[in-house]
Length: 123
Image 1 (cartoon, helix red, strand yellow):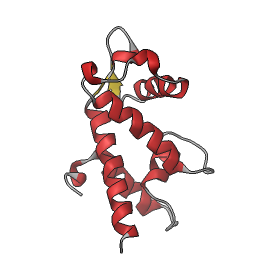
Image 2: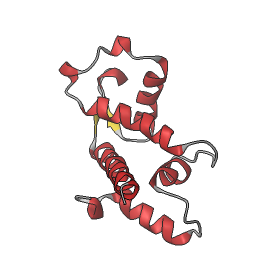
Image 3: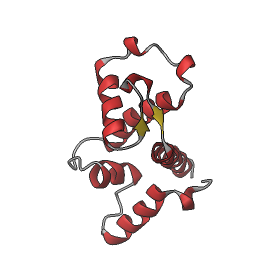
């Protein structure tokens, strides 16, 4: 996992995991339960993948993005979610948002979590 030690989310995850006594929690649980204060039920990975989808979209060049008017409802909600949690910035419209450094680190953390999970599955 490249650059992960400098990633603030990885540092916070390592601190969090050292304080709990549950071997079944992972980085997806960390984001959903600790960072976003979601409940413990459901599939946290699915929720994180929805966030990743929109982080990827916000990371694209505005000119190459799918037309914002074609976003479906949950995607528009996700833009507001990303803005509320400080992962994006925008000018006149949330549809023209872009990733800030915090959002870039979150996307890196999620991508590394997916790589780590894939590596564990291949063992």
